Length: 161
Length: 207
Image (cartoon, rainbow over all chains, first blue to last red; front, side, top):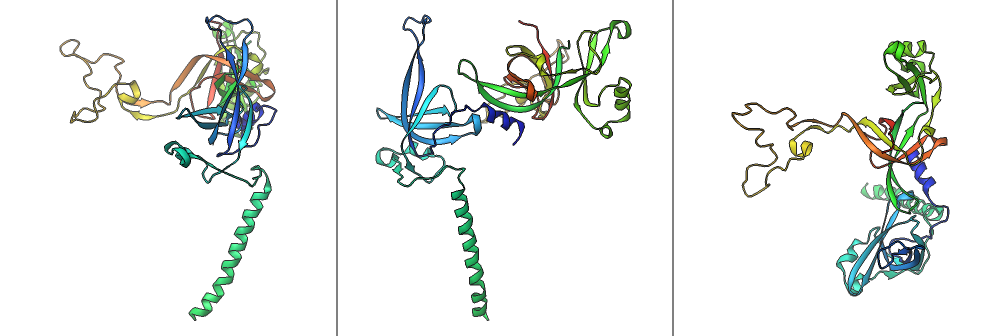
């Protein structure tokens, strides 16, 4: 890790962000400061929470610079918002539904309509990326494949002879 | 008191300020810089301070530089630069990022990234010609002056040539954060040069 990365690490807020992935449907709670109608500065700025609910179609960036794109259909019009994951404006992120997807970026949803633009729900739970469980299973399967190849070769050789 | 310090560009990132707005910042590793030589009015005709940055082992220096540093009984520094400063500085003293404070305005000087030999469109933002419809005039500079008067090309006429790789100063950058224990300085906006390049950060008077 270089010094810039270490600095970015130190910029991350203490409280953790809930685990969610591309394809999940989330409710992003955003702090919004209301302006006064007459344009003058309010003595006590009114703050409220605005919710944006939609499908996460991309996660980009690392550490304190990470951001995610949420897409929803609002009155028949597709709306996308990009949020910095660690922005102080974000009061919370709630995972409504887990999605079953095979892409890291779901940009293809932009050209789809109706049912085709839906992400199927995922029922099993996936572990966070740092969990070793996924990794070890991958290496195991690779090892077994190699073993299979090794077993095949002698038999093939004997046939050709 | 010195007015500037040498540093190294570490790269850019973003940070959320007190208004919760994201600010693009350049991260600089600044100092600690040692004072190598103090120039006085009596001896040198003007007042200035020579500072050094990045300590190196003795074998890394050539004889002239080593001789200069050892004659001043200063530590061995890789980079030397002169900045303005009062004559009350002590040779051998160290100055760190604490020289700068949050909210200060600074000027940052560095060697810009080299772009090679470039045409006028990239180098001087000329408009160029239409790409198609058989115009036969694309990226050339066009006319570079009038005829009988002045019968020559005006000085400073923008023409193709080497772009970048020269010393550039960016003035008025805001100090967003100072991290003394890590020798880090975060300034708003971009700074000339590549990541790892040496920069001179100078204090600016409050505008």
